[in-house]
Image 1 (cartoon, rainbow, N blue to C red):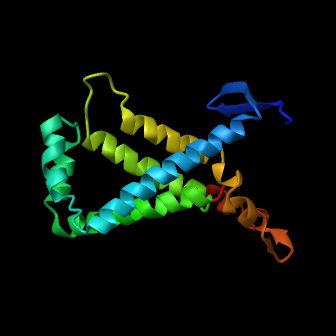
Image 2 (image 1 turned 135 degrees about the vertical axis):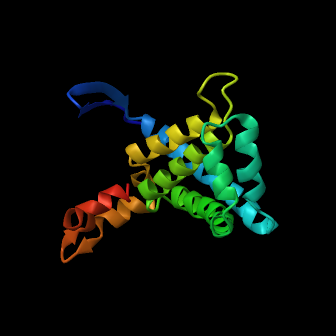
Length: 184
């Protein structure tokens, strides 16, 4: 087994952060991708197969009961019929698609973005600061963002192959650089 350290460096707003990443980290990045993929896929399939998922009660009752700073927004969403109908389809099927995307490493950054977005909504919907502002929903949001940042779909995932697919003799991501934002 070969292992080494890889230097990482990034600058944002005049601040530079740097560090070393051990090559064995690739397995933990893959594990994070698969863990979140399986969790979301299972959650979505459970909702789809039950046929009884309805977000209205949750949206109207849970955020006000737990003191969420966005309670009024959630209640308003829960009282808007077309929006509840949309959420009742988007959440279960979104979880299934996000989960599948992460499991097979397809459109990984796009899937991770939507996973992080859902976790942000769940964070405010399940508001609980009894033990501080960091809870499981917030932590999962950061895991999704890490999966996206690491380009985890390139690790034993379909994105690695899709990025190299030749379009007029040029790899897809070189011909269409914007695809880097959804693949990887």
